[in-house]
Length: 168
Ligand code: TYD
Image (cartoon, rainbow, N blue to C red; front, top):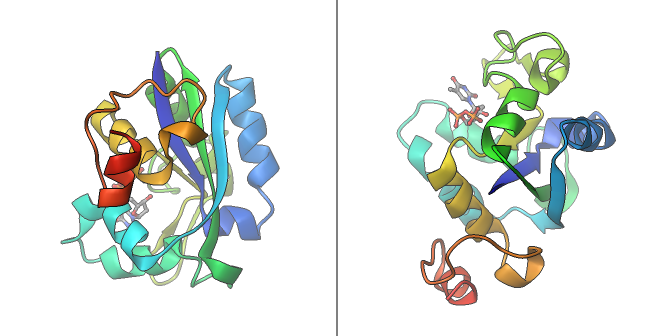
């Protein structure tokens, strides 16, 4: 059994795709075990994308996830945790490839993503990439009390001291 983080990115919210994404993941047989509207701070955005900090698109990515390109008030975003057998791969499959131009038709990103003229991928959703990232990200965005039967070990903290304390 796995749990994985999904974010409806600001382009998805702006283009009213929230219901569609939830519908697709419902259709994939996954169970929603946590949901929360989050105001994405600079710190949270940087921690979430820590592995990409040396990439040329990193600063734009931070602005994008904080809603700065889509006039999202309070940098608000919908964060979700889905659970199921093979949930990480199944959500990634429903999402499609990172680059919307390469994402298969019928996937969320293949149907609704775009690459802007400035080269930014606007790909509608975030989905954890692997088991290690899923654990880190669920712990970063949620406290144990916010997740129905949290499955990740509660002794290993990630993120800020407060987040680590919540999971310890
Ligand atoms: P990454 O973690 O590589 O992909 P994924 O979201 O599929 O796990 O990249 C994070 C985000 O960075 C990606 O969703 C969109 C953005 N991005 C770009 O804007 N340009 C790029 O060339 C890449 C690789 C990613």
